[in-house]
Length: 243
Image (cartoon, rainbow, N blue to C red; front, side, top):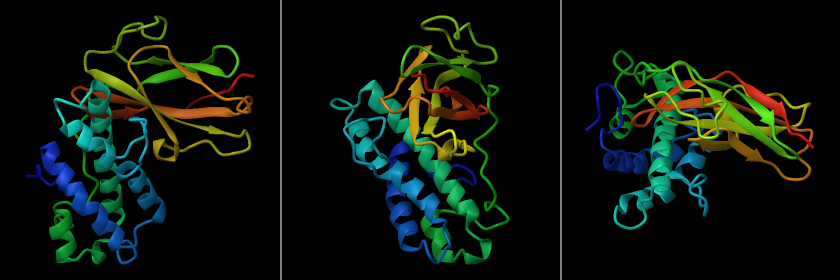
């Protein structure tokens, strides 16, 4: 069952079944519901992305590995599955909130679990966050390398120690980032970033490839609160990739 006005089932198995219905339904009805193609592309990348790297896998690749408790459910698989779960809910909510109220049919609401405009057609709050947005910086660390150092209100001196502590309410951070030319605009928010690193120890080392020197690494630090709740997002953090 879903919780309150949220269309998402409370248990992860239920959400897996929900995503398996909602995603193809939105694909089939994208035109009629006037869903932004960019938003659908982002949803597809979260839902279905074949890769050998768990950090890049989509929901349908990760969940079977997560479901196998005695076999393939490693700590990495669990963490990535929970992150993708949060990303699915966030992206679906964005799509739902952008669909004009007049276009919703009774069948749409029945399939997707969205209530009427007076009870659920506004942005769905994920609840108050326990932490303030983190701040941080990207420091040069030799050729084609940067170190991300994160400062979090209430945390230990994690910016200056190799394996710095985090506030008691923080599970981990996600650094949403992208490489860009100096002439390209900086990303406005995490949805415009192409890479997503889970950060549990500091400093977080980023390495780049020849040809990246002189480009900008730009991104946002998102706090993931315990047990696995999306928290606040930092302002833009960026630096030039050293040559």
